[in-house]
Length: 362
Ligand SMILES: NC(=O)c1ccc[n+]([C@@H]2O[C@H](COP(=O)([O-])OP(=O)(O)OC[C@H]3O[C@@H](n4cnc5c(N)ncnc54)[C@H](O)[C@@H]3O)[C@@H](O)[C@H]2O)c1
Ligand SMILES: CC(C)[C@H](C(=O)O)[C@@H](O)C(=O)O
Ligand SMILES: [Mg+2]
View (cartoon, rainbow, N blue to C red):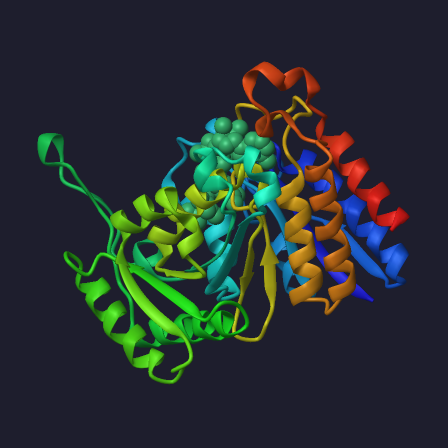
């Protein structure tokens, strides 16, 4: 029996989590394993109910679990709280930091047959692509101290600190090279070594680690060029190894060129293999409560959880196949359709139901 802590959070989080839970129950039944899920408040919802975005009861539930399935947190209602109380920083970064979830994997693929979903020009989209972003998740300017504000008036200053240690760079680099060995043997390391001291150390350490993986090709790109290349020709990439901030930005590009922010799942793992699984996108306040959010990123994050934390490869694959079938057969939420075809859009629950039926029937 596996215990899963479910943290749905804010905005579209609870809506897409309902679909992920349905899918989880469907594969558990089909593949005959037991899952015990328990819901916990997190983010803005937890501020409203407990006065704190990451209550002790939620943290205790996560510690007692085998994996965390996370929705998304934040929204305009809580955006003006002091930074340390905000849902994103307190709950999301709090969980990533507490469990030392330094390895964030964001796989973005586009099958040539689904090229019409992409926002890229058709001749580029028709090549398809299969990019794995490996994003360092517990260092960089996100966690560096000091950060804050000082001074007054025109001299008031906001500041953050960008840090990377050799140890942090090494451990994420090894995982990127090992991932590439199971794929197309290429790592593109992203930095800004023409300006930043942290990036100069990053590049040097990545090169040192690369020596241990002679079968893997290594290239370095500056982050601005990497953003451009992703839109020009994403098919050139295999594994993209990114520091925290650059990986955040590039993964939104990766999501969109597959078709939608609502398609990109992610797995965040620590050295012991404990993981938290969440869509790369956010709480989408602009569409929350309308029943139109795309549940696929949450459902594919559930598949990643089954693969990496619960050792249920067949169930993970069944989910991924059912998602492909939904996309192939035009079972699409509005975000995947051009404006003049939105009347064909399916709701969040219709997409979830289709995926469950597909899993049951194959
Ligand atoms: N993991 C997280 O909890 C997480 C991640 C990113 C942003 N956020 C937070 O979410 C809030 C909103 O952030 P934002 O608007 O910058 O980014 P967002 O990712 O929430 O939304 C960006 C755009 O993508 C669309 N989108 C995102 N997910 C979608 C889905 N599943 N289906 C259809 N459309 C989808 C939204 O409608 C919006 O137009 C902020 O408070 C932000 O800090 C949380
Ligand atoms: C909400 C925010 C803190 C978070 C990040 O920047 O890591 C999000 O954008 C993500 O990509 O998971
Ligand atoms: Mg992001």
